[in-house]
Amino acid sequence: MPQKIIISGANLRSNGFELGPGKYYDEAKLISLDLESGEFSTLISLKNVKENYPSEHPNIQFTAGCIDPDDNDILWLPTDTEIRKYQLPNLLLLSSYSHPCFHNIHSVNVYERKLYVTSTGLDNVVILSKETGKVLEILNAEGKDPWHRFCPDTDYRVLHSTRPHDAHPNYVFRLNDQLWVTRCKQEDAVNLSDVSQSIKLSDGESVSVHDGLEWQEKIIFTQVSGHLVIIDRADTNKKTILDLFGNSNSRPIGWCRGLFIKDDICYVGFSKLRKTRMIDKLKFLSKGNLKYSSGNNALVVSYDLKSQKLLEVYETQDGVIDAIYGVLPFNYE
Image 1 (cartoon, rainbow, N blue to C red):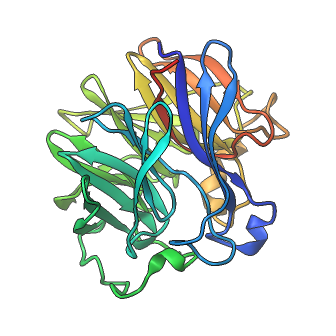
Image 2 (cartoon, one colour; image 1 turned 45 degrees about the horizontal axis):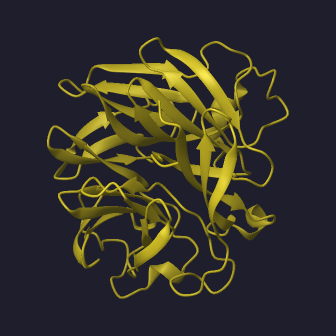
């Protein structure tokens, strides 16, 4: 078991809901969690941004990053409009890439020395050179022309919102030597080379899906309702759904997203629930609840995939982090 993990996300702006979409968060946070003591510590707090953001009420958040598979001392960490390269463990900012086609970035992953960026606000996956940050290709998550809805001459970084999204792509993963992307709107994942190849992940339950991590011969996704969806790599029609809290009436109220797996243990994020106009996405909250009936802060849970048992619940204190996008290992003292 790792001694520490790191968690990326943001803190809510006090009047973010009233201001509207694209203005919810005013502080990007990267925090660590000591799995033995349960202590959370702030590693990076980003509050002041200028270039590449709206001039007023910018949405400041860290989303789902990755450890570079070619150099485990490099952390790639996205904001809404940038991909930042940090040295580990000192978290020295080495470089930052940003392009006008970036909007509401949800994740970055590295495959074959390229950065795969989910520009969620434009329903696209943007592929960059890892070394230079140059845009190599833009792929639409519905297989359409990347600019069928948007204008390539517009700087979308300075806009607050492009909602409604057609696909809401959020995470690129590898399946059988092909790259796929998870889509919230369709509640599925599709092959980026042929979007007609689709894996249904929510059975029409209107429950958003995220992530897509390898575990043994499986791929694991999160549902915002607090479930894991596990598909077989060899036969994607074989699907298992695990409820992290089983039949418990003491389950957190929150948006489940962000996943890290070590051996047979997974670590899953639950964001603090914020006000939303997408009420249909919150039907899962109707389940009975005792311990967390009055709400809860953001938290991380550990779960044993082999025994299918919840191990620990690590709840943050006020002000530590509200939204969680990503969970990663931190293999340093």
